Length: 339
Image (cartoon, rainbow, N blue to C red):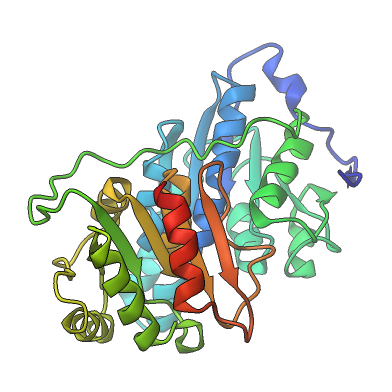
């Protein structure tokens, strides 16, 4: 592993666990869904290294259910930067922002670790009471963020996002970087009585950008091939356009299902039940990998090398920018996963 360096305004934090009360740690990783999931192994590493530590997490309110899936997270502190930006003229927005500031300052922390490396996340970390740790300017996604930390670390940029998060935490807290990968989560026990099928494959056809979508004809060909092998494709949908797309797709693969609207915990329960998950570049594919469900991610407009699905189970990233995989390629890997 390349060397990791830090500025020495404050030393790494392992010494704080030697005596006195247990450490209080605040993690700042607010968005997006995939990035939040990529930060879960940091919680597992911290729990392994400091079993008595209290670990809180500041995250966008729309993704707050993800940290709550990890039993080592004590308090989730939601923030709503995305929504507040759209409603700056409303008094309710400023009241919510004030409530957030009071909540994030309610505890004094031994360490506030920002693994996002953005100006917005650094400013949120600055609101908390405690020493702030983050990426050095040459390693941060937005170099200006480094000015708001008390100690910064140079973490290689050419490694997967999960590893970058873990290496940053290991540098700040001075523990080994070679701990086993563990997302630390399990799906909640939620009734999926609407789904009677025994062998389910979840097809995640929706994503945040149209250029990341896989061709509908490809989905139809893949879905029919999976049905022939005794699997029931389930196509979750969020927004109205996503639901229209999924309903259009299932018409071409009789036997496939579009479930009712699902919350994030309900989606996690569905993914955990699946024999296989196949999805485009979307945070839910990362959630499936974190749950150790066999996962195949399809890339059409992005490069998966640094942010693709990543886990200790069966995970495969197919395609890349300008080179989407064919249905035959995906089916071949799917058959391997199902074995």
